[in-house]
Length: 286
Ligand code: MBD
Ligand code: FE
Image (cartoon, rainbow, N blue to C red; front, top):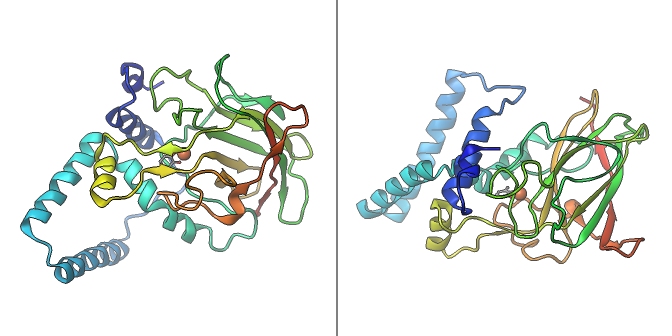
C-alpha cells in the first residue's frame, strides 16, 4: 500500500494524485516510445501551432496566460497529471490504438490500475470487507478468440470503486486489494466473479482538475464502472470498462470513455441476492 495514502486520514485530491503519480512511475509498458527526432518535431510543433491559433482567435490576455501558468504548476503539485491526461486525452489515444481490432471493444485504463492483483479461481469473490456495502453483483462470462474458440488459461483482471466511489490504494482506510483481483478462467475460458456494484466516481473537487471543472461549469462525474484487463496466451490484451444501463452519467461521462457495446444490463440474480450479468470477451490474435 502506498505510504502516501496510508499516512493520510482523509481522501484528498493531493493524496490520490500522489498515489496515481507514484503508480504511473513504476509502470512499464511492454513497448516504449523511441525518441525519433522527426516525430517529436512534428507532434510538438503541431501542438504548439494549434495553441498559437487558439490564442490569436480568442485574443488570450496576459491575465489568462498567468492563470494558465499557475494552474499548470498546481496540477503538478497536486500529482494530478495522471488524472488530467486519462480523463481528457486518453480516450482518443485508445481510439487510435484499437482501430483495427476485430474482437471486443475496449476503452481507457484510467489512473487507478494496479498490476499483480491476487490470483483467484474461475469462480471467485473479489477481496472485500466483511461488511462491504453495495448491491451484490455476479459478473460472469467466457473468453474466446475471434473464431469462437474458448481460451483456456485466460486471465480476467478486475478492479473497481466501492459503494462510496473509492479505489483501494488511492483512498485511505481500505484494505490493500479491496475490490481488485485476477480471475483465472477455467479450461473453457469461463469465469464467475462475485462482487458488489460500484458507485459513480466523482473527480476530486479539491484539486486542480476540480478547479478546472468548476471554472468551466462542467460536472465532475464518471458513470459507475467495472475496469477490466482480459488476456490469454498468444492473444492481444484488452483493457476495457463496463457500465450499467440507466445509471447516472452513462450518457455524459466526463472521461468520454463509454461505448454502446460496453453497457451491461444486469437482471435479478438467480439466488435472489442482488443482480447478475453475463458478458463475453473476444480477443484478437497477437
Ligand atoms: C476513474 O475511476 C477512471 O476510471 C478514470 C478514467 C479517470 C478518473 C477516475
Ligand atoms: Fe475508474
